[in-house]
Image (cartoon, rainbow, N blue to C red; front, side, top):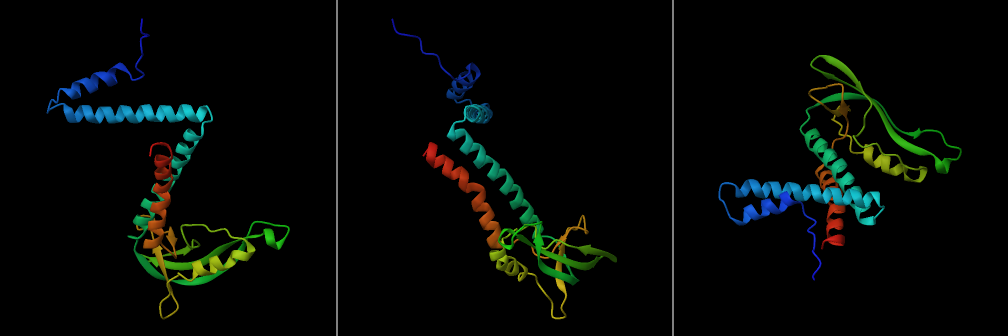
Amino acid sequence: MRPIRMNSKPWCFLHLKALLGKQNPLTAPLIRARLRAMGLINFTQEMWQLVINGQAKGVFFCFALYIFIACFYSLIFQIRMRCWPFVYGELLEVEVDKFGASISTSDQDFVARALYRYKVSGVNYDGTRVSPWLMLVSYNLRFLLEKQMSYIQRSSDGKVKVFYNPNKPQKSFLIIAGKVGIVITLLICVLPLILFYFKYHG
């Protein structure tokens, strides 16, 4: 006597698939959408179970998903920032400064700091943000901060471009995302998921 083989898919999943096989032109798109949603839920539950069991596949997927969400949010912010208006302001201070305390110079971190003043709709604001990305570098990599500050745009009379949020003028930056930065963020966003697909499903 042959053993009975249990199907791991839920009954409602099989029922929807059977209905789809009838090719009802009115209900087929809705059934397909439900099948995709249920498949995604099942996949997510499977990955979460793998994470609980400490399996590499589940951990890799969660890492890739986290990178995707974080970078996607950053990507949207960068694109929106490129639409921000700007005014010319007065640069009061800009330097590469120490970040935190350290016993030795080789262990010391450095960061770019700035102070600038600008006016929006007759209101004066003081800004300190150089870039939306906070770069912390070691003593030997301080030249990266100097390179970053070289992207600050200056006018012929010595003033600097200040990009500000039109809804919150007190929020501003001296440097906004360029096209290359957006492309790099996009690649970082999707690359872990692509690697996951080819490693486990390719």
